[in-house]
Image (tube, rainbow, N blue to C red; front, side, top):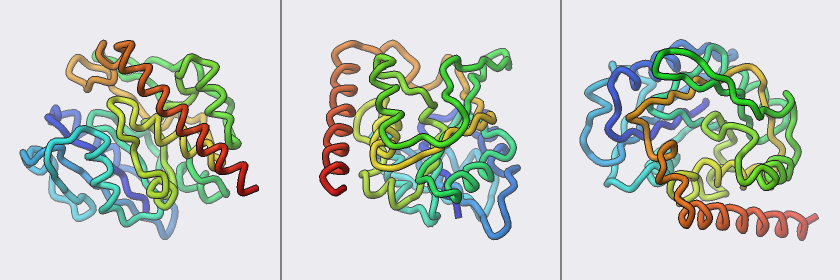
Length: 245
């Protein structure tokens, strides 16, 4: 099973329904299935009122705590061998779950894929920094992130990884706005991953999306604190990995 995790806070109903439809249309390899863990950040119940009944969809809630805590509460409920992030306003492309399963089944621990920005007018805009299609050895993503002023070479929103690895790393990192970066960097230090050049996600950009695209996300003091902590954790994990070799 692959457990798809979505943190929900004040969703735009049409966007959330599009996310559901993009998941419901996925075709998986024989013997595989998916579950969608929709975790409300707070106890409004709005997601359950928007989405159709589907036995594969599991709703959860908790006190308002932000996206990282909300994702981790969903992780605690995940039954799948693999966990995949899906933001409440994004759209999966056809076949992406099957490609994720195939990549991780080949021997890596995590995978990411190409993403296109979905603009308000419906147009799609490509990201200009994708790595080559294929395997990403431990340390490669970290080095590229450092060289590119703490900008990832892959889109963390597209990541899928083994659940046991995510749990070992503490799930999504408890920092505001870069929790998925923190998890991906940590995973990429300890294990090999994969970049899929086929487009796996349409990343919606619109005026009502969360703070990760707003000016607060790039406020200098907070940004530097987040990047410093993510980088220090990566260094500690590298030292630990080297010590056990």
